[in-house]
Image 1 (spheres, rainbow, N blue to C red):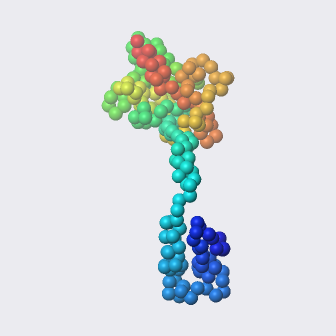
Image 2: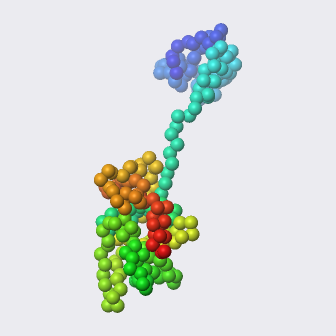
Image 3: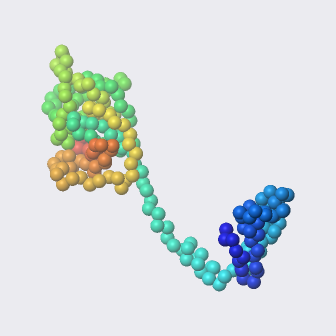
Amino acid sequence: MVEEEKTVTSMVVDDCWNRIGVWSESKEPCPELETMIHCRNCPVYSSVGRHLLDRPVPDDYGKEWTSVFSKISSREKITFQTAFIFRSGGEWLALPAKYIKEVVDMGVIHSLPHRNNKILRGVVNVRGKLELCFSIGAVLDIERFEKVIDRGGRYVSPVRLVVAERKGERIVFPVSEVYGAYRYEERMLQPLPVTVSGSKAAFTKGVLCVEDFDVGLLDSRSLFDALKRNLQ
């Protein structure tokens, strides 16, 4: 508070709380403080406050506040999304987390008869149900994960299976590593570098920088449509 007398319209305000009250450094404080403890409890302080509130409104008061409230809020709306991050071969990729149903241990992938397709790997047993298993690495034309051939001629891999579903269509795909869910602002999504081309560019919406590595956010619609075409 300002340590001086103030004139408000025709009323002279004696701000004794600043001179001899709790907000002053006077060596002779107000004697009423022994009883009131604090200036807020004093009827003089309350009376001045009422007079200030009852004083006439300045001519430009309404215009000033009308200008304040009529301004459109300049706050930027921040939208958050959640991505599920995984690694396929040597590439870190992501899908919208809302499409991920579960992550399970890797099982044996059984090839389908009369099918010679790098994208449609076959079928795999997930909790007693056979699910179609696809290779996202093959769709994007990136490095495949390391394979291990068992005695029966079938291949298994020391990775995990991700079960995803979009509009009732379920897919399962193996991954080399799972990072997990990552929440991000939409403005954090960066455009693809000009050096990225081919299938990877066609199926990737943008790049997220997560910790010290870049993640390609996949276009779920394009990806599911491409996988569905391999069933025909």
